[in-house]
Length: 310
Image 1 (cartoon, rainbow, N blue to C red):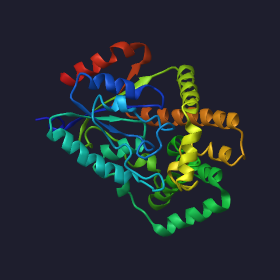
Image 2: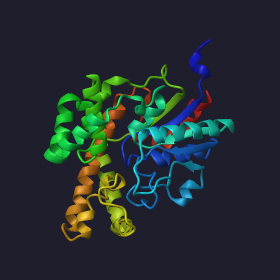
Image 3: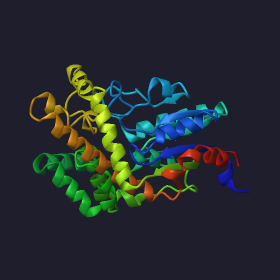
């Protein structure tokens, strides 16, 4: 007997930001009894709607959505917390004989769900973490990120220098184990508690960049600056984990008249394009993913549904 066939099945739409993951997932959800778990480290925050491209109320009405608006933006949230909640939700969805669907581009969340021992199970040392935090204060995020680049270029490629919590965690793991975090475990179907059917949309780089630029322009038109201002007025600290997200940290100086809006918008576009590149580096090494050429999108939903039913 193939033990793999006894594992619960999960459908997933991953890949780069602005690649169309949500739209494709919703097309499938119109024809399968799907329930969607957002797999996005920013959409978990309440009140952060525009800058995170959170699914609209109309989109969420197509299928039940989970892991959205679950954390106050002033609070931190870990990979381990996400994985624990998602495991329970997946079990609940499966109990109804519905299809659990993961939608998002946070690779660490997918990795945590894919492994028997989640990300939080890796060793930790408070003293080591404090030392790295002290180093950050002395040398700054760019230099600390360069240090990670020298010992773990794969992890460094997907982490922004301002994502200091994860940069510190990756360095901590390297120093404690002698092995880069990226080499500790690569998810495979054999290791996973689930059988994953994962899809990503493959865009030429120039077209993906155009989609990213257009999305940022629409976010600004739809009131992203006002959204950031509301968060600040509500008491969310500028150094909160949520405010390190793209589109938020760049606009904070605009609110204090330390930067011009056009310059900040260009920084958001550049940062988002770089983030998409890091996402693609991360997901390209996951051999479970089927990459769908953007020209095949009109028939992609039917293809995915047929594969699921086989």
